[in-house]
Image 1 (tube, one colour):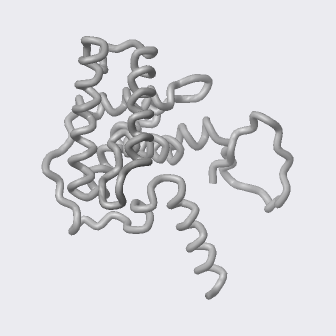
Image 2: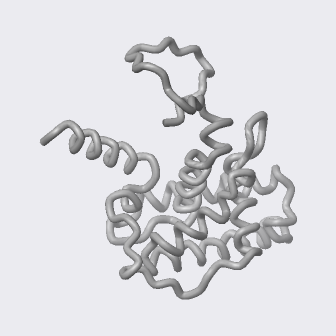
Length: 188
């Protein structure tokens, strides 16, 4: 094996650990993917608000500034199997129902604190589900949403340039760089 093959395999393995190995290992196979319907503009706005609750704007841009809702719809439509697409879409509806049940109003009408509370409870539910699920069962919908939010945000221009340490043209390789507590990760 030559060095180029080894580096590409290591990059593939490390990338797969970040955001769902199936995206990197299987890739997008349009022939295998069937979409029952598309996402509306309201769905994209809804996903943007979910993503913004997961990664809110602070001194750096939030997920909405990175158009993560649009990214999620493209990834679900183009890269997820039909079963996963259905789980994701059903999850969007389940989250709406949970919002109405808990607060008596839609997710879009909730305050930031109420959204955080609802998503924190849903995240606990997702962790419990993922720890007890069998291999053949699909992922929890909120796990999919979180993975896509992180992938979409940190691979976007605002996420990479504003939230990570970004160097357009990196200099020489330095194997040992001093780290100060609170330093941001590098965007590569």
